[in-house]
Length: 374
Image 1 (cartoon, rainbow, N blue to C red):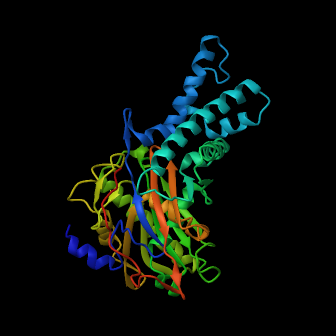
Image 2 (image 1 turned 180 degrees about the horizontal axis):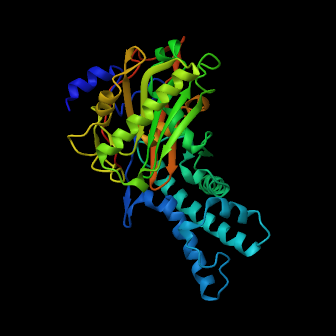
Image 3 (image 1 turned 90 degrees about the horizontal axis):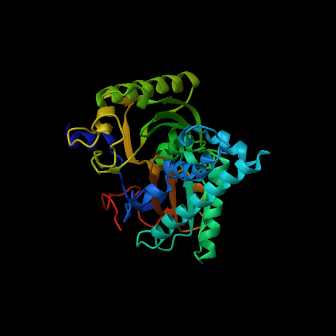
């Protein structure tokens, strides 16, 4: 697929750009290793389940495990949340013990991030991902902040404001240049994960709040591609069909849909829309030099309304973090950690505006680096 053709089709900015309308992306997909492997694996969703299992192990030997024989990775977050406030004090203490150990791991990982050049002077960290969508996740985040502050790290840690399923869609608005919002009231957004692909119709509510703080997901569609195990081409075909369905729905509901699709995707996103690395959990080989998702979608959806379709793709941690842009204006440097299958991460610096104009006349900029390493 010709890269020149892709650039002509998108016509807005490079994929994976370090300069976006509201922020500079200082770092994303930062990979730090220690003697045990990638640091992010110590603070993932699976890591919490492993910790919980370790605390259950001695209780199993005496037949006092409150969860019985149920595997730790199959106990729902809802069940764990209920136990935290339930009458079974031993079960509650068990979950609290796991939360404390996980918070220590998250604090260790966060500490290492904060000591890198890319994350220097970070004032606030937003924590997203599926783990955040639970009481136990919120407790772990709060405990992590306390641990770091006790060590004199001047850092605020907060759960992401929007539901994690919606944050990755709403964040796509901040990939688009502001002129798009003047004539349109909604965009299409895609959030691609190792298990699910979610597409949504996102209403900008720009007339109510030009900082996009009132934006919301009108409707969304979820496909658990991990259950179907499709080919790469099959996944693109299904994604195209989902987006076309949302276009039809937007027309039916009377939305003025922008000719823009924002995509959140795992991995290191190259300027031409290819994926350099980090897409190993997606169906098929998405890192092939012969595959380009934005270009494939442009072929399937060449126009929205009467205009050529513009598509912009960025790392999923970046896009989820971007949903917080309107609420981060009281700080200058801030970051996001997304706790899921792995630990997504991104660090931002707000782009201040003088007299209503940005310091730099460039609305969207070139990507300065493919990835960041310690």
